[in-house]
Every structure is written in C-alpha cells, then in structure tokens.
Image (cartoon, rainbow, N blue to C red):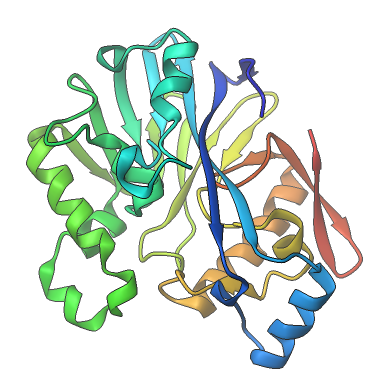
Length: 272
C-alpha cells in the first residue's frame, strides 16, 4: 500500500489502509447464473475472497478531506486501521474539514463514529442524495433483504451524530475539482468521486471489489449488491469510460492506483 501523497488536480491524495476483508467464495455471484459463477471461480483459483479495505485523505487549499472513513472498530481487528494511518500521516480527527461518502455501507461509513460520538467533530459529511434518501427512509426497509439492511442503522447514526453537518448532494460538482459520478447498483445511490486535473483520479467506491476478476468479467458481482443487474451495468460502463478517458482509478477494495486498459473482450487494471 502506498504511504506517499500523490497529486491529482488541486489535491494531494493518500491511500489510508483500513485493513483486509475476507469472505468465503460463496459471496460471489454471476449475472449468467451458477454455472458461469462456478467457471469464473475455478479459473480464478483462489481459496477465498481477500481484499483490501481503503479510504482516502485529500490535502488541498481547503484543508483535509476524506473520501470514505473505513470501518472503525465494528468489524473486528482485521479492519479499522484508518485512524492509525491518519495519525501516521499527521492528520488529527479535528483537522478533517469534510468526509465524502461513496455509499452507506459499514466498511465505508462506520469509521465516522468513535463509540457514541462523532469521530470528526468539525467535519461536514457529504453523501450522495440517492443513498441518503433511500437509507434515510425507513419505509424502504421492508423491501430490502435483511442482509442488505445495514445502511438504515448507519444512516440513522449519521443523522444522530452529525445532524445539520450532513449535506446530501446530487451528481455533479461537490467541491472544487471534485465531481460525484453516480454508479448505482451496489446500493441505490452508490457513487464515485472524480478528482479532475491534468491527471484525473476516479475513486469509485465499490464499483469493483476484485480488481482483475471483475475487470475481465464485469458480470461477476457480490451478494452485497442491492441490484445486481444495475451494479453490473454500472461496472461495465465505468470500466469503459475510465479506459476511454485515461483516468487513474482506485477504490474501497483496489490495491494502489490503477489504470484501466482493454484486454480481449474485457479490461485489466494495471499499476499506475
């Protein structure tokens, strides 16, 4: 994991290592069914899913911005290391001016809390309005499978601890040099943030969890996807766009900074 700041547009960007997430292979799904999934898993030849958990620090003229906040202590000792990574980089929680959330899942938003208080006492919380609207409406809980309901409790906690410091925002410009790009499917309002510059960086949240497996075959998804078909469409579209635009990419579960390049009928993520 990179421990150095890298310049994109008006910001220096640092990957904050929050830990490692592990899961059995049965969390993987495929748009074409079980046989296609089994074939992909066999070709992949890994015994389990093991992926990094990242969030990001941005340093610019407007102070310190985070993109996502990690898990906090909620998911065990393998994760929740972002606060230590921030401290190593010389960033105190009080210095964080704003946190841009890609979506309201635990490994991206539970790090907003330190027990029963806000971890970032001075920060604005910027959330995609589609995600905040969905998870902020308890009426949507009944239509949501139980294993995908965590966002409701997280959203309630964000409201409780951050109150009027929450800004739910539509697609488009959210900060100088930063645009929200909607990537729905993983959650209703899952989004990425594009840092625009001579060399642009797209932080795409969970558009891909398994970089080269899903780049090669975007029809591979996770059981955590709220709408698997929409997630596949978003994944395919953002891979094509990132390759075409020449964007560097990273995300919640991507190793380092990558470029998206065409490879056969799919794509490959190569080190940037």
